[in-house]
Amino acid sequence: METVVSGIRPTGNLHLGNYFGAVKNFVKMQENSNAFFFIADYHSLTTHPTPVNLHDHVRSVLAEYLACGINPEKACVYVQSDVPEVIELYLLLNMNAYLGELERVTSFKDKVRQQPENVNAGLLTYPTLMAADVIIHKAAKVPVGKDQEQNLEMMRTFARRFNRMYKTDYFPIPQAYNFGETLVKIPGLDGSGKMGKSEGEGNAVFLVEDPKSIRKKIMKAVTDSGPTMPNQEKPAVIQNLFDLMAVVSSSDTVLHFDALWNSCEIRYGDLKKQLAEDVIHFTEPIRERILDIYKDTDYLSKVTRNGAERARESAAKTIKDVREIIGIRKF
Ligand code: TRP
Image (spheres, helix red, strand yellow):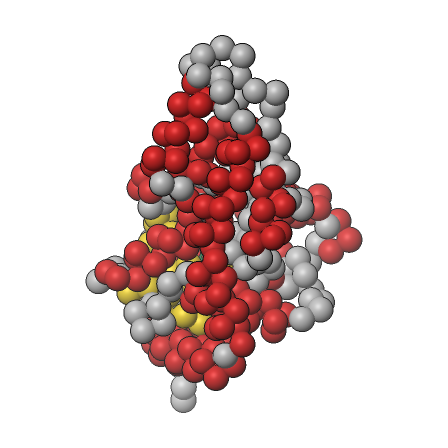
């Protein structure tokens, strides 16, 4: 069975874009792979060094993952900081990671621009920690979005370099796994393109959001002045709303509004009202599960304890082998 690893930083709540972009696929992948899904709390310290309540962020994201259907009986679900073996591998990989290549990573350069007051070593070595996350389980596949491509390339470089330097074929070279055709882009509500937590208030619909707030956000979504000719191509802001509808509404609903668009009889207010109700219909059961799971400290503690145990078992084996390969031995 193929091993897959993926992680998410606990820096915000999951939104519809996360759900349809990745989480839905994790749920599918846990069925027929040896799946590890973890909360990258160490990684979040590279941008949020003194979080007000890191533990609570980890709890939220964990509850959200589980509420979406990630099943801890199938996938190994754990918190990065519960698996110290990852950090040992991170240190060992850092010995063969070079300043020049790390400085050239686009996401590092972006962060330097965004937080010039905090260009820390963790930020620079973000890709080595990410590589350690993945190759600690000797994973073959990493399901990530396009934004992580370069981090993935670095990961491959580090795995290849380890094999070359220590004359071994120990680490498989991990591959990006883009879910084939099922990776859909979920547009945001502000007309700027992608749904994302960093794009500003009003852009993303969060899974944990209450119906009233969802209605308000969707009613405020950007539109235009309406079609002027039959069968006109939709401008991006309108296509965005239809794209969202395509994932949450029935095909009849989509066809209905499409026909109204084509005959220039569409009323955006009606479309948004319907869209809001369909989004709520979709998110409400997830939200209820999030709130239940979030409160259930016993359950969360059991899941993370089991997850850490399984992850550490896998990780410890790798560290034992890696120490042996490098020549770190007991007397
Ligand atoms: N960098 C990823 C993100 O920001 C999170 C992450 C950390 C990750 N370690 C990983 C993803 C390992 C996949 C594999 O989304």
